[in-house]
Image 1 (cartoon, helix red, strand yellow):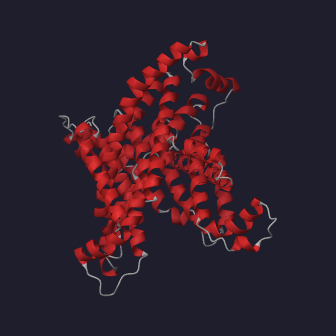
Image 2 (cartoon, helix red, strand yellow):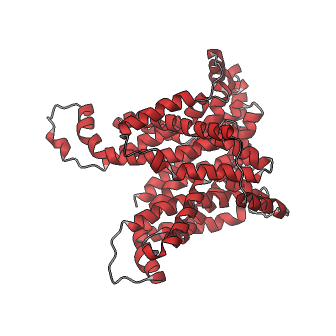
Length: 486
């Protein structure tokens, strides 16, 4: 562990401690025990909805994710070719800074609860993510093959014949990972009414049908856990299997309502702008934006930053606690049962959407910031712990290294700590994005005011707050990159 890693970790820990007195961490007097007992009973005795409903929700979830990731990967690959352009970098940062749920709320005003809304809500931010990650993967490749081409070779030829073949395995691996992320995003889009698994999951929770909610959750766990088998086949090559799945996904999409061009024009040219701007009243425009910034945006930003900082530090502490229980380094073959339990726990933590965690914690702690902090920390800790566990198993250790706690403290953790810190800083932007959308459950982050603006048909306020949210994420992403470079 380097001194810079220690200093960065200590700085974030101190900032989190400073944030505690200012954050809304009040535990309200609630009596959730009967409800929690019913949840526990539902987990023990799960039930499943009608087979047609379950199949349709799962198919829609997979179809949205598969089509969106495929389109985003192709577009991102093209943008990676010209990623050195400042315009492309700004565009990519801007689109990925807005959460899929916010994109869904935007497109829903134009396309309604349709397949178009679901696919675009995932495709657009994922395009920005793919562009950035593919460009970084290409930069890491060897430059030796590039020297074998003729000096007059154009940029596209160099890209196709030297950079792309080297980077392709990493790109494919990253695309598979993003597909798992897209499945979670597709599920979450059900919380705004799209016909994915999340729609039925939210309905079951709100109606207190916890046995059915448990069945839906278990179905989603199985979907995530079996990706390696149904997305790959030793009998059918991927070059044939993926196009086959894409074709089936197109036919499986739910029927979309007819869209008239005037609605899109009306939304872009009129609905999203304040009336004062449309009327040309400059002073009224200034007063409107001042009110939105000082009375709405800044307080919401403050709450979002406080909760995200606390969630980030708690995530780091949980990762350091969780990752050893799933690693072969600490639990070799003779302890495979314990290791299997640890890996199953991490699968559940990273698969359960933050919305579900937050909903359960709202019953226990009431409508404060505590449910958001715990939900974000548990979900992200499950994901980072899984990645850190895999990293720890790839390292070589001395045969005379210690065992147990000494092995953890003095040998393994110091070696994986830089990678752990890099993952945590990378997820910092994601934690802020996710903390914003938890406002839909009533927690006073940016998402609370954005959702309220859409419900009140105040699209001008909603767009302004979404732009503020995007700028916050761009600033955090830039800051985290500078920290990772230290």
